[in-house]
Amino acid sequence: MTDVVTTVGSGSRPRLPRGVRLKHDPARGEWFLLAPERVVKADNIAVEILRRCDGTATLDAIVDDLAQHFSADRARIQTDVKALLAELAAKRMMDL
Amino acid sequence: MSPAQTKSEPPAGLLAELTHRCPLGCPYCSNPLELDARELELGTAAWQRVFSEAAALGVLQVHLSGGEPAARRDLEEIVGHCAKEGLYTNLITSGIGLTKERIAVLAQAGLDHVQLSIQDCEPHSADYIAGYNGAFARKKMVAAWVTQEGLPLTVNAVIHRANISRAGKLVELAVGLGARRVEIAHAQYYGWAIRNRAALMPSVAEAEAAIAEVEALKQKLSGTIVIDHVNPDYYARTPKACMGGWGKRILNVTPSGKALPCHAAETIPGLIFWNVADHSLADIWASSPAFNAFRGVEWMREPCRSCPRREIDFGGCRCQAFALTGDARQADPVCHLSPHHGRVQQIAAELSQAGAAKSAAAYIYRRVKQREPA
Ligand code: SF4
Ligand code: SF4
Image 1 (cartoon, each protein chain N blue to C red):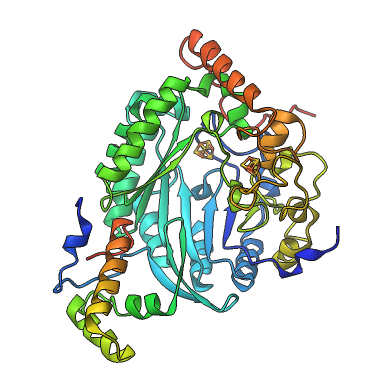
Image 2: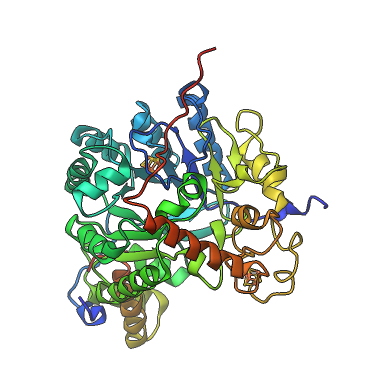
């Protein structure tokens, strides 16, 4: 568990654990990731990534889908997705 | 001052003290010395209205607290209402009063998270601190029921002289109980804790050892458990950003409906608090005199006024400034730039020595004052 980054394998199926949810707030017109004693503002890209973390889609499939959605470079997307998921997993806000 | 607060950001959190009743008597309890009696508590419908107003105002998370919120029979109904309003609902509990069945109903009603207090990892000491026999054993059962339900669990441990040598063990206990998060919170001296300061204050050496131990565990356990570490104020160099800034992020409602910018705000004389029975939450947030008293930076004096950290820590805690300097507009004297800072260290050193010289902690337990017969 010390090197979380290496555990984000391409076949892992990331999922928001119970007690962590993505919420759109109409009062501020923004998205937030809500977790125990945490309120984290989620930008558009984070929202697109997190919405796809349903415990069914693999990391590979999520990256493919995002690359298509944004018509962007797959390798760059993969780096961004892995970084976000690893960061959240270290805070127990993502199950891998 | 002009009513310049109309554009203030909505609050992210609402701390709802549903009741002051609690079977435990923790000597560091943050509740006020004058506890609200049961007859004064808001009813179910009144709380539901408050939560609906909170959601409309932009509150994202509600923290159902007390006292012991499970002392209210309508807790399940309240949680269900919060969930329906889309609020992230957190239950802050001692565990006493919860059963396996109640936890299942709460989970079903949409509860998002449970924060359970643990007084120590040694059963005898834990029960002594809580002033309640069997509390520790019961809490372990509650933790198991919570995780079996699939609810995320946080363990909260307040650290003080009686348990400070076991701060690391408390983290391990939390991991063993299946918690995803643990709060290691060095006692903060408000409410009952200020009364018990001499019995609670650790020495500087004990505080430093505990801080080092917990910080090392933070790294080691990353990905296993999140450790939130609240530092011991009296041994700090800069103050905490109390409540994330006065009237900036959080609103506290007492059992009888008074809206406070912080749970200790009533200790500051002269502040005028509005009640949710008379004003909407939006109105309170925008215009209540107490909320506007220390908003922003206009109220500040030197050294805060011209300090580059003034919008990072907001000058620290107003209640602590008042308690230790007699003036709520002063910098929190925990700050090394405060002219009163030396005094804080001196108090800590004197109290920790005086307290340690006495035998086992002579606590003044938190209790509802018995009324004199009329
Ligand atoms: S700190 Fe202790 S006495 Fe105070 S409300 Fe919590 S469990 Fe009850
Ligand atoms: S002087 Fe005031 S604003 Fe600056 S660090 Fe100290 S308390 Fe914070």
